[in-house]
Length: 284
Image (tube, rainbow, N blue to C red; front, side, top):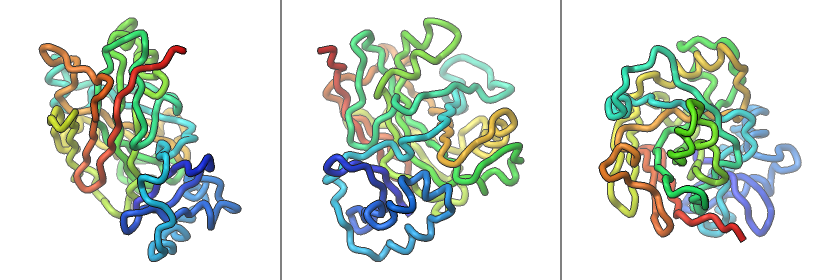
């Protein structure tokens, strides 16, 4: 299934994508499940699956897409995790995953504008595969890790590079308000038992800037879930953003930054295409 979170006429809801539109599951299940995270936590995906033959209530263009899990409690991001990206940064492969966190309000949904902050023009693109946890994971082995995955989505993990390198900690440069995106939907894990089969491409205005198989990860998804679940309980709706391939804007000569007027696409073959425009922050 392809599941979405969205707003329509001021009302937040969720549903499933089918036949080019959206079945508004919130209209039917909202009294029991307030949002998509609640559906997953209740183990009620079959109730959404039962709506697959229902005619769409809304067109994709009729809604304002939200990040897949707007109320994620934890968003864990992995740095320098594609072998190609490690090579272009001149580093050695890390011994352990390089982790940092993002706040939920640093992301927008599919079709919404990513905001370039007023204090910097160094807004870099980072196409990534994101993993949404479906079943709580605490001290989970890599052999059992994928049993805890609800599904997958695309991420543009937009980074404000000058702020990122102000100190050895990434927090500021990785958490500017509405500087990244998640979407267009959650593809449930049963649709792709092996996430290493995905292939990721990042495009700006149609130009391909990143192109790599997810199998190029230094630490694959089961390893990441195992490692993260050693030190923090992963809950339903938590998100692991798994890293970006080589080709980021910062290492290019001259650098390529996302700028107002650009259309940026994160296309993961077999999953979907996350598309966003770029606008400048309004300081009025």
